Every structure is written in C-alpha cells, then in structure tokens.
Image (cartoon, rainbow, N blue to C red; front, side, top):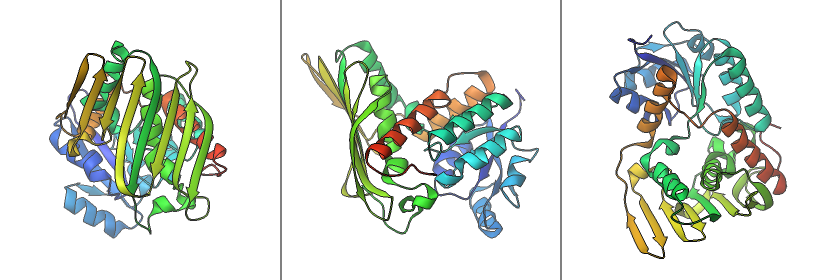
Length: 327
C-alpha cells in the first residue's frame, strides 16, 4: 500500500464532510475519496456528483465492506458513531470518527477496545489539535513562560437555529456534545491533567437537551477550569484562556483559526499578539491522520484521550442533573 493512495469511504452526505475531508483530500496526492453512502441513495448520488466521488454505495454496510476503501470516515449523527465505527473496525477498516467520539464514555470504551482487538486505527476528528495555532499554545504552556498553569477556561458560544439534530436528545444532541466537547479538550490539554467536576449548571431547551451549560472544574495539581458552551448565544465567543503564575495566554478562535484568529501572550516582560496564518485545521488533521496510518507518526486524538474527553462530558451532565447521552 506504500505506493498507493489511501482510500476513504464516507458514511453519510453530511455538511461537515466537504470541509473536513473532501477538500483536504483534493489537495493531498496520497489520499482519495472513493465511495459514499447515505440513508437516501439519491442524496448520496447528488453529493457524489457535487464532490467528484466516483462510487455511490447502496448503504453504509456496502461502504465498510468495499474493497476500494481503506479508511471509513464517520460524520454521522452522534448517536450513530459507536454503531458504525465498531462495524467498520470489525470489517477490517481503519476509522476517522467525527467528534464527539461517542454518546458517552461507555460507548467510547467499547469503540477503543474493538479497535485494539482488531488491530485497527481509530482516530477522533478534533481538527484544531493539528493546527500550528493550538500547537503554539501548548508549546508556550510547556515552555514555562507563563509559569505553572493555575486556570484554563474554554468558551464555545454561538447560535444554532432549530430544527437541528443538535437540539434532539435522541440523536445525542446538546451544546456540550457538539460545542462543549471542544471546550473540554482545550482545557484538558492546556492543564495536561484530567478534571473533576466541582459544579455544573445547564439551561435546558427541549427536554433533556442543554441549550447552554457551564461547569467549574478542578485538577490534581490544584489548577481550576471552566467549560462553557451555548447554542443560544447571539454573540459568538470561541476562546481558550490559560492563566499561569507568571502570565496568560488568550487564544481567540482556536477552533478554526483559518477563519480568523488572535493569539495573545502576556507576561511581566510585556505582551505579544497577532494572527497565526497556517491554513486549514482540517487539512492539517487529514495529513496527520494519513501519516499516522502510513508511517506511524503521532495522532494524539484517539484511544484513551477520546475516552477521557467523553468521561469529562458525562461527569458534567451528571453534575448538571441531565441524563447521559445514549442512556
């Protein structure tokens, strides 16, 4: 396979698929998207024609069993991630699964266990991690320039109109699942430890669905954290703020810096602030995943990290008095 393209099959004609996979794949010579399926074949046919995908499968099963598919990309609704990821792994495929990884930590555990049993690669598509902006944040933290981290705050507040599957409990929706999963992973990685939830409060929209949620966290080192997400905020706020004993980092739009960003570092020596122009987070992620599959290079957003992120989400829901997704 070393001299051949890495072939992706797509489950679902999802809105996220073009920016997250199809466009990056078109720019990477070693990757191609060969096949797609959707619940409605006509929709898959339209999607394939629009994006130059050569083959349309009758259903998801046909994609995961196809001989011209090496990797299955799973951008399905959140409640279907575990079912079809496990099916693809059992069919002998590697998988790149959209975030959030699963409906809950128990599902995540099972998915990772199956990947290990089958000897397959299972990555979670947290694209921000692979962009130089987020890597710069981690490098500054680890350098000690801002001292020891004392607090990290992650905000992902936007407005999502209804109807939308993110507003449905049955599809594992909620602001924490779709948006706050980023806030959680930003804060976890900034501190470098796993959190305990001190308190959490949710504003409930439809029954059992958090329109907005906020949680206070604590870490073994004594650092504290805040995770906040909202689907009802008229003023977009997507930030990571990391405070240390000697300074502070403020990253504005670590989610998709290609759409505009600001990175500010403040210490006793002064302040530096500016943009990091380094292309699309998705392209960085797809390249990193392909390099991981082909050459064994690092792809950190997988395995125990995916389970830990879902465990933190579960704990926040429990503290806020809401049921776990998929329960």
